[in-house]
Image (cartoon, rainbow, N blue to C red; front, side, top):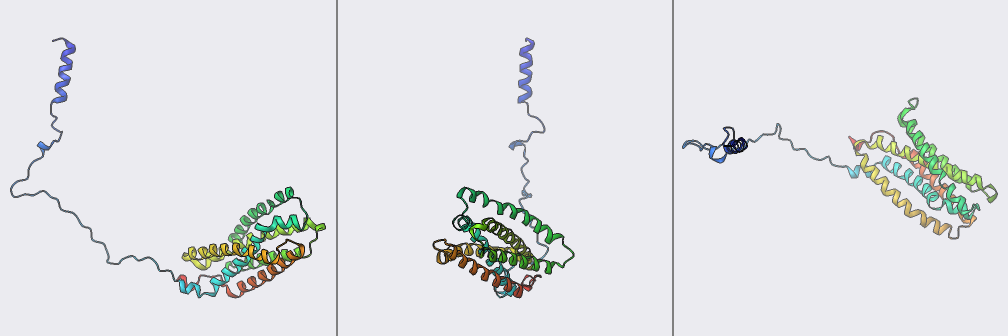
Amino acid sequence: MPPLLGDATTNIRTTLTPHPDQVSPSNIPEPKNNEALDTSVIVVEPQNDKILEREKVPYLQILASPTFWGIMIVAFGDTIGYHVFLLYGPIYINKVLGFEVTSTGILAAFPYIFSIVTKALGGVFLDRASCIKERLRVLLFVSLSQAAMTLCFVALLFITPEMAFIGQTMLTLMTVFSGMAFVGVMSASQIISQQLNYIVTSALAIQDSLAGLAVPVLVAVAAPHYDKDEWILVFQILIGLLAVTNLLFIALTKVKPAKWTQ
């Protein structure tokens, strides 16, 4: 046999020859008469009989808590003030202060840039300022930021077109202080709500939407023509709202873990 043909025959034989380690159905031994295949299932018993239950949320206790409403109220005032600038700031700058539309678009971007920086710095301050107790630190941070925003609206009452730059500055500062108050509110919410903070933050998101719906109604009623005198009325309403919500926050809110978190 030629060598090439011999090698091919050898390879075929090697491939077709059963290997002792190979398992085929015919190689599986059948059970004896008195034996049966082991098909049992091992059941692992739990170490204890306690069933883990999901923690129940004490909604009624939360709604009955003055601290909860203190946070909601101050956040509502802050959100109203912020949305007035967000929705109508450029219109006020253009219609009342006389800025050109092209300049208005550029100027409207400045408050957001400053707000980003101040929010970051505010968070660092709340975290690092250990010279003041945490509870007092958060309370002062929110109330002072809200008060500063209120003063910005007070200044807008006396702004004329000749003082347009000052008016733009007040609107910018108002946005900055609003952002700082928001940082303080979120910090207070975390301290008060602890593991149930997701409930309070959900409520804050709802009030944010409600405030966004309330602002167009307020402006439509108080300043339908966007005149200066009409805007003065809007600012007066906002000043009163911010002052009242700030005082209620101070009176109602205790910045410490609430009883309903225990």
